[in-house]
Length: 91
Ligand SMILES: [Zn+2]
Image (cartoon, rainbow, N blue to C red; front, side, top):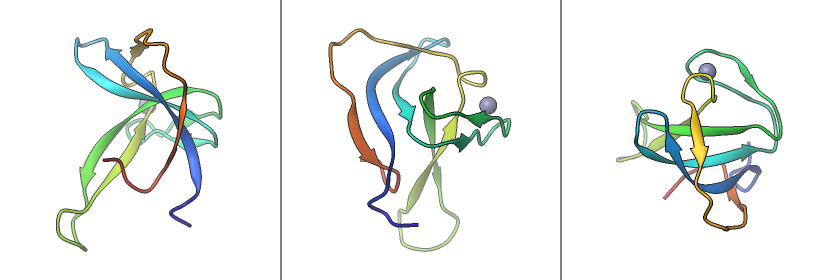
């Protein structure tokens, strides 16, 4: 997998049903939810959770896709345009 592959668009800030704030993404390819293994189809919104990788480079983290069923979210109307992001790392 090339790190430059774009697999999702960052949509912007999204409110979680639990009251928190996260970043919403729109899938450009099919993802598998890390929590329930449901397929997140291209075009669907989803969020991500950060997971520290057990081995490898110091401080390395990865982000796992989480579907709307597991973590409902509502986009804030910020007027932002969707931004293409790479799937490799989120700052
Ligand atoms: Zn799920």
